[in-house]
Image (cartoon, rainbow over all chains, first blue to last red; front, side):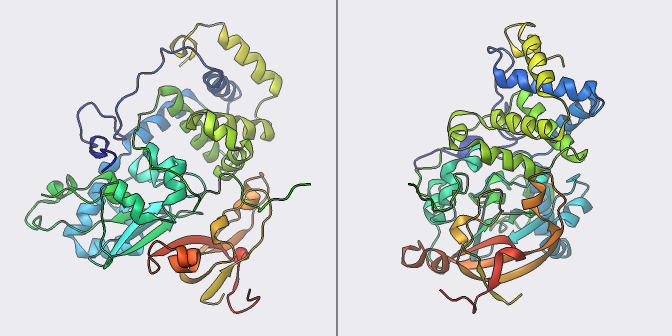
Length: 218
Length: 112
Length: 92
């Protein structure tokens, strides 16, 4: 496989941010034009009474609290609870809220992987992503390469992620072109039948919920 | 004379491209603040995510290739806020100029 | 709206959410999603009526023809009703 994707798919990994990325050194580089613009917008909106500092820090905290672990908990619940799984597949937003996740106005559709079907999520027009459940998208999801190719040669893209699907599996690509966001409900790995819900959630990777990966093997 | 097939640069589904770059990074504080500004402006009805996208698209392909994700976002947020009258160009320019005098790094200039 | 639909082959400039690679392609309505404020209006800060939105399923053969990577794989996209026409009219 041309890229070792393993390193940034561990959202429980030590030294990783909630979004599953290595922390980035910031604040100490030379002040840029765009950083000055951010500061100016923030100050002007606060001075004019449009926003408060507490609202901004609260929103940052809310986004930091969203991570693939939220989606993993939803997937694990679906694996152990058939009635919940049915609710998830009919209305994924309500099912996620039912578990206590604050997903705001997110319109969410869950698509189920089976022995015959593998689902893959992309946004060709911009970078739509179920951010209110999973946190901010990985960088590759926003690249020209992924956005261009996922709808035309999904199997070749999946091979770059280390996934080689047989012809007996139908690939279903979902392009988030408008108001819906998507999460893949991956198939439960064989040999995990006796695991607890919490143990199962640890098998669920971010990429397995986008469709570019599979859950870890127990 | 010129002609055009109607495909805008951002509408890239199905275009030829190379291997997917797998490297990632976490977001800097100023980037998280840009994200928060967008979400809050949407919640307060100042503009919509569709307005953000429209501004990003209108910035063109050159911006996509030369600016980072949140650099493009802050430019698009600003475009929408100027259009909706949240502040004036003069106010923005004056403030950005004053911010530059606070220090050489974001940490010193951020006022947060 | 018919079950078999074609994405209109319109090419206006501006902010639209019907991707270029699907224009003129025929698919099947996978589900009806309800009505959402028209992003083509919202993008310019204009009043935006709600428009019906559908999920349309295409086969890769529908979209890419003989160049499809795997003809029976599928692509689902959300398309607004005003970008769709019945597949059996205006045949190309």
